[in-house]
Image (cartoon, rainbow over all chains, first blue to last red; front, side, top):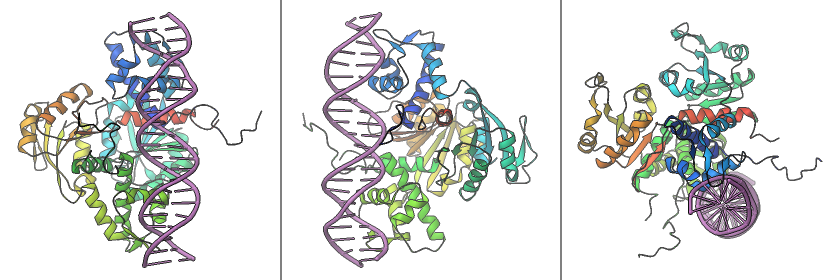
Length: 220
Length: 220
DNA sequence: AGGTGTGAACACTTTCACAGCA
DNA sequence: TGCTGTGAAAGTGTTCACACCT
């Protein structure tokens, strides 16, 4: 009855790392399914990814009890359950802003469509690109972003524009009702609470490797 | 024997998240420098990224004392220091394996060369691509991977091949002496200790967003 | 046996709060 | 005063260990 003084989350909350692992588990389960395997243990799942059996069980237990003691998990059933959990049971409508190199790579990326992410709009600032046809999609001018996402009921916007342009893209998409962004620009985007941003910074990933190569972090 | 029972790291160790933030700080410092700013406080740096001033100071303090109390940090000096820490003071030699869509996007990605990552070799399994010229680089057959990385003194291999092919690429590159990998295949790669792997899984990033959109993780 | 589900222990990260210097 | 550098506290995520089920 009301009164939750220190404001607990009402149900156990999964971290981003957990969700990323669930996504990997799903992929492994699909592989197992293709191999005709019927059941799988947490240990077996763990050995494919680079985690531990306990981690797999903990991750799954956040969402329910899917396994059978002594047996393991039913492969197709757990895969189905993970698709539900990850929200892949329904298609999501995606708009791509920025039709440059990264945008082009994403457009052709097979995993995009495979998992139910439907690319429904492409926008760019360059007038020479506007009007081009990418598959069945016609490139629109980024000036129309707000109406495009609103009318097209876009769920996710992929931001593949240069850093300085990214915040404005996000602001306008948020105004159009978008609640999720995949950002490739190397900037930190400000969004209202309730809106999710996921950053992919390729330069930073290389720099992490560069750091490791120096050996400054290694033991001794 | 050798007895290091709880196995402490001998010096304070920076986590990957710390290193990623350092990479961001460097980018912000370069912006500040372009704007002609001479000094910057931890608070100011934090406000650009989405962190806190304390976090910035902790991150930097792992590597030394770079600031002046009451004043803040000298912009060009700290930038220089971060470049050292991240290993960007020297160039790294990079080979790209997989000349498909993702490979092509990376080839054209400006941040690649900007930060001293020199693409020195491109390899692919498709015979029709072998011999193509990408800029000054001629595409070689992946069968030659081991000798290419050894003779070319390659430091980092970017793995942009389909999942099932990835492990073999890594094994052969490791045999050729490579100690760092940027992996775009949605699999978990096994490498000997001392070799670093950094995974970028675009499908998983979208799925994290999909999960957020369901609102299962939001408060109530 | 074999393997799950989970509280408790542990490890790691982030935030707080403040002493100390310019 | 303003701001850094840093121990200590709080918070999160991971691993352990074991009760329990098949």
